[in-house]
Length: 156
Image (cartoon, rainbow, N blue to C red):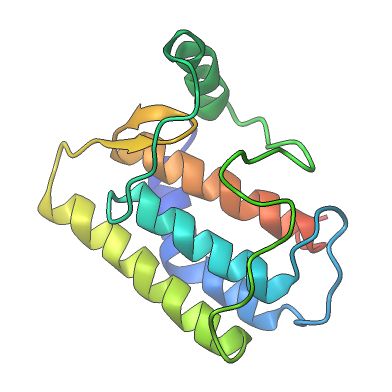
């Protein structure tokens, strides 16, 4: 894992600004979510990332070392990476618009960092990667954020 502090800084300060500049009508290069659905999806997984929302482990225990080794790497998620916790049809949007969805995401990111600041050494169970500490949680959120930014043509 490279430079967790820089990745945390990106998530805290830059990520939602990039999303704000993204045209809500931008079509994804893969997948079925639109921009707002993707932003709301990210809020869901930030809540999972700090333990605010707990989801059941999906990965067999014997596969966790391989999954965690991938997570520790700088390899990106593949396009159309399956998520067994999501329907084939994207969830309906919860917010009136993209701005409200981004506001929620920023609130969830702020909460994520506050939780780990107040609970040093905290570990959370991710449904796909198992037990993660702060560094691994930041690594996952950063990797997940860039996966969806690339989905909508950012950073290419």
